[in-house]
Structure formats: C-alpha cells, structure tokens
Length: 390
Image (cartoon, rainbow, N blue to C red; front, side, top):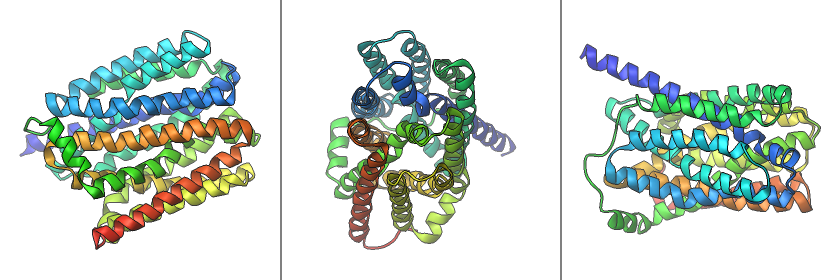
C-alpha cells in the first residue's frame, strides 16, 4: 500500500511538471506570434489571420486522427512523446526562414505535430485520476501557472533579444517536456476500438453534437484571444512586457479556480458552472470592444480565472461522462478539435480580416457575440438534460 501511494505521488509530480512545461512552452511562443508575424515578418492583417488559422484548421483534422490512433494502439505515452519531439524540431524550422509561403508550410507542420499534445495528455491524466480518485483540476492548474510565468518572462526576453527568441524558448521547452512525458503512466482503456462504430455512436448522440457546437462558439474566441490579445495590448499603447504582464494576470488567475473546480461542479452543478463561465467570458470580450484604458484591460483579465479555469474542467468532464469508455480519447479529441480547431480557425481567420478593415475593438465585438450564441446553446442543452449535474 505504501509503495502504491508513493507511485501515485510520483506520477502526480510528473503530471505537474508536464502541464507546467507544456503550457510554459505554448506561452513562450503563441501570445507574441502575431506581433512577430506583423512586425518582423512584415505580413498584412489578412496574412496574419491566414497564418494563425492554419493551426486550428490542421488541428480540426489531425486531432481526431491522433485520438483514434491512441485509442487503437493503446500507447498514448509513446504518441505524446513523439509529438513533443517533433514540435521541438519544427519550432526551430519555423524560425529558420522568411516569406509568406515558408511560414505557411512551417505553421502547418508544427500544427500537425502539436495537435496531439493536449487531448492525449488530458486523456492520460483523466484515466489516471479516475483510477486513483484524484483531482484533474489540481493537476491541470499547473498548466495555467506555466503559461502565466512564461508570457511574463518571454515578453521581457523578447524585448531584450528580439522576437526571434520565442521560437528557441518554445523548442527547448518542448524537448524538456518530452522527457517528462515519457515518465507519465501509460494510462489507456483495456479494449481495442471499432473506430467507425465509435464515431457513428458519438455523432448519433444529440447532446454530444450540441456540445461540439457550444465548444465551437466558446473556445473559438478563447483560443483566438491568445493570438490577438497581444495586438490589443500593443494597439492600446502597451509594451511587450505589458503583454506578458496581462497574460500573467489572465492565465495566473485560472489556477486557483481550476483547483476548486471539481468541488464547485459538485456543489453548484455542471451546467450552471458552464453557463456562468461562458457568460463571464462573453462580457469580457464586449468590454474590449470599447478599447478601454490599459488599466481596465489588466483588471478585467482576472475574469479569465473563472471563465476559463472553471469551463475547461467542467467541459472535459461533461464530454467524458457522455462518451462510451472505449472511444473516450476520440471523443475528447473531437471536442478539442471543434474548439481548438474549427472554432479557432473561424475566429482567427475572420479576426485578421476584421482587424485589417476595422479595428481590434471590432474583433472582440465578434468574440462577444459568438460566445453569447454558445451561452444560448448551453441553456438549450440544460433543458435537454432535464436537471442540473452535481
């Protein structure tokens, strides 16, 4: 029993290190990538929108494939490690050339390798905490901490050494994360999967399909904001260090809410949490439409703590509760693909055009309107459930 407890503590530590490093790497690159593409690569607003939409469109197709391969091979740890090593290499490739088409191809290749990381690691973590009666939110919050720390440090380093340094930071951290990933438990389901029947079953579930649409409407703006928030700060007169500070407040505030997410879901109800979190996110986007003073922007980022910190654990739990056990990685991957893929594609591409022809404020008006559509769909789904969860 003592040995088993030590194994659980050791694996918990590896999960904490994994989530911290993964999102540290993501935070060192993507919040400043639009600024790099605009100021260093010299791309137009529409070109920036196209480049930033490559990742979500590739993710839309690649993420479910990664999930199905993981379900079929039952080797999620191997797949996760390989994807991290490839991401490290391709991060350097991204920084090694210039020109629109070079960047386009490099962005697509990086998106393919990176699209496996979040759904596969989340599936490993959820299977693990379910087996040991642990707390997913308590592990996942370290991703928010890593992201918050990285954007602050990354912004300062970029000001000192130039924006090209963000690629080297990303590549080094992804390689370190791959080493940690190999030490995670090789959690997987015990049975092989009939993929075609599994997909047919998922898409035949009305609640699951509606939730995919909700994910599109709510996660699309959330993830696209990671790309355009740096432009909002700089357009309002902020510095690269100011961008890092804003992301520190936003991402750092997620951690305490992720820590208590499971208790709040049990006490208040899953659907109530989802609706409240989405509504707060929409309100935040509407505030940015008015292009408020930087002090208001910095203060409002704390709302991300509740909106994202509570929505992510609740949404992931909802998907896993709905999905049959033998296609859970596939279900999680599809859910992630609709938000991190299709929704982000839709938002990032249109955001680039809106930014070029109107202003950054109208980008956030678009985010707010789309998020409120997601809130209405959540209310519809709540009615279908017939009761609150919890």
